Length: 425
Image (cartoon, rainbow, N blue to C red; front, side, top):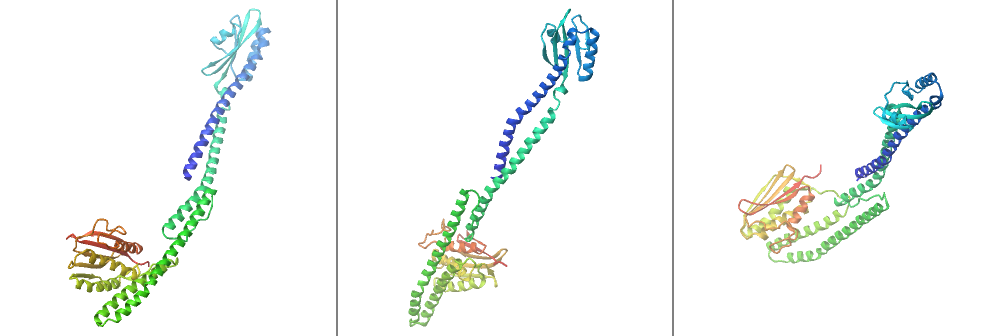
């Protein structure tokens, strides 16, 4: 925008200067030519009394003196054919002036001035002088140079003013764009300092108000999530008491473990909501090897009950990643839960965790029917589930500096690769 404004001002300035300076330059040249012609005509007319009345010798002396003073060739054509002064041919202008008409004519090397002189007994005499081209254009080049420099100076001044004006417009717009990108990157404390024209100040105020409103809405939403999660503690406590009252110790231990896992997930939701509402919170760190190993061990019990063979390839830890342990556990549960939800009983699956060039690579592969079309869309499910499992995994991967990849194995089963970035430092 700044460059366009400068180009616009430069174009308008140049066109305006051309519209004024070109006619002015032509006028300067015309005035110079007219001034030189008037001077030459005045010098020639000073000879009229002498040529019309004086003797031949007096006329000759006067003409030679005028030639010496003016530096221009002066010629007097007498009626009897005598030519005095600078030798010159009888041009058509001279022949016309011999009939009693004074005039000015253009020549290749300048301008010809002829004056008819009446009064001599033998007829009309003619005084002829030539104004050289150099005299006609004397001072024109210097005047044109001054006009050109003046035009260039005006263009430069116009560009400087346009640049200042454009800067006063583009700086607030650039700041608005910068703050908008910061808000898009979840820097909700970013604000714009209102500056520039009234319209831009109004936009800046609206953007600041929008940022503040987003903060309020997010804070309220996170508080509602935390409150809702906290309300689940009461039924969880009741469920724990029911589990402890079971007569079979194995059943009681299994149900109690499930309740403990659910309670950890609820506590993780509360902590995550509180953590995200704090602007000073940093990125969490966890050991991917420990978390994945624990969750695979948990799901192995259900895999044994459903006749599934589990292949675990776990790299030795620790493998630090930039994701909280509770969030990573939820991701692993979501991926393994998809295997159990979307494949028939007895379908084997494999979990592999390895160090990658940019962090850690978690791969979950099964030998089922594969992923349905649109499985990566949030809320999309072909098996009656919420359709949020892969979206949860994808958001966790991106929050940890990685990404989620969906593919198909050699046998047609689904392959989910979750790349997790290393924590900062």
